[in-house]
Length: 256
Image (cartoon, rainbow, N blue to C red; front, top):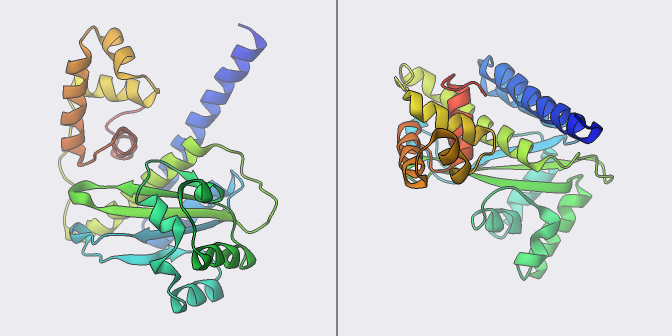
């Protein structure tokens, strides 16, 4: 094995360990505050030290209404000023998050939005308040539920290591774990299970295999892979691969 190949293998193993270590710690959290601390400590290892979690739609399954900044470690003075000035109604981060898929950087916003004066002011004042190098992501749940997480650094110097995919996975897991914690008082967890074939497909998907690659590996058609994946989405009440993989790992249904 070449040096490059060895380094690539070590990098993949390190990423897998980091995520599985986070999942283990997060799943042992017994309070929302404890879960958030695990999340903040984990993203902190990637150079991020500011985080805010919000519900952008009502979540009837956990009896939770829309709430901006449900839990966060943003500067309190900034949050009070942000709401007082009505920035939540024009914030370009929130607007773009609702229109895009995956994680994005705040600095990219001028490429997608013709920012108005108040929107530029919102971003600039956020930086003055100590929110730099921002990232945002919208997570989607069942029944058109959505929730968002924004991340930033308190220092101007960008210490983020650039691992957007891993941060995205942390965020999706946090959302699933938060909902699970809030549902505990309502009764037992649902009795979910995957068939052997569904587990095989989801395991390969967790290893970044495309439908075509999964089809070849399991000797089936791409149509069959897609059919199984849709069944997995229904069982896990998700609508995308990342969330399905994260939820399956969280519930112990697969072990990548």
